Image 1 (cartoon, helix red, strand yellow):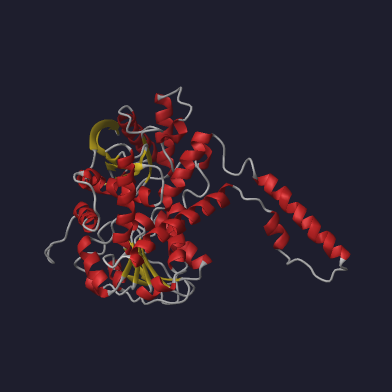
Image 2: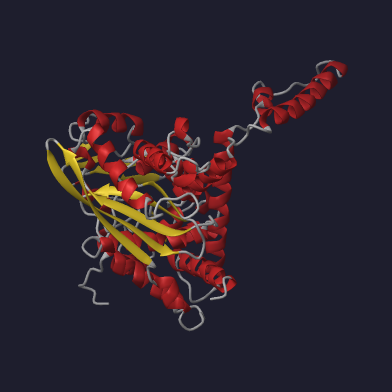
Length: 476
């Protein structure tokens, strides 16, 4: 690859795939079977808006059906195209395999700027798009299950679920046709925060291993670490919020589309978020230095850099100047293949996107299971747990009385111990367990093989191996 040539997003995914499979001994033809996208459907449909007919172009790509249903978000953005959707679908295949979510990879997109339309217009557009996909089984609880992505959220998922249910009135599992729905429409607690929460859990797991921290030239805990976040959307906001409020990290830089904010003492993530919602950008925010060229903050001295928006923001044009020793890819493909090579040579450790942002699909998996089981998590066992814990508390209090109050329980121990796990606690527990297990599988390859020098290659090796074994089990 020429050092002057910037690969496209799809080319970056292929290059990174190629780098990994060179280290594997796959049967002839299986490598190509795993690499290629199975199918991509392009739909062009009309919707009458504002007294005129408007035509929209959308895509749904299925990368791999080694497991079904296939899973992947639907994004609304003007830059959506077939190559991007197919690359994202491939990443979904590897991501699901890595975190052991039993799905193949898929992705969808609609070429639209959602900010240009009123809510009722977006509903008409979304329902028609869902209709076009559902009638071809590209939305289906057992075949293809979308989720939110850039430009979409709970609202759009509720419209899609309702449209599918209208078209399939006898399908008892209709709610499972899409994940990321609002709670009152079959969603699950913790889904909105899931990807950002997963980023936090990924960093917590990384910082548990001295060898891994040393590889990035870091030490200690997350407390006090300087963090720069690019993109304060759903993922970036939750990651920054949890890291600052729960782990004591200092969010010194926030990059948005209209510029960037910098404060060496740390930014108030909640206040910045509220400012963005009210003013549609960070410009004018009072408690920080404003940089018109927000991208310059990607090159700021910090401990952790979190690109959490678009792909390709760290590329050949700026990779040499990126100073962060640790980058965690909260977005899909924020580091190009060319930039990845430069950063690795500099000694930068990159926690790859297929692992780092897998919190969304992990909790989507939990939501899908909830919809198929038709019962919320915790409903059967929560009060029984509390009753058993009450027995322990009662016995401790009895012993306290017998021993003459010579010792006592900590003030908040009783309340904490008695509280049974509800849906949110169970979801967070399952997500934490998933992120820990997936990281362990990556780092084992990273540290046990001389020909694997980075976490991204390790992640690809783990995931491709799992996909290959699935195909083998199918007789391919």
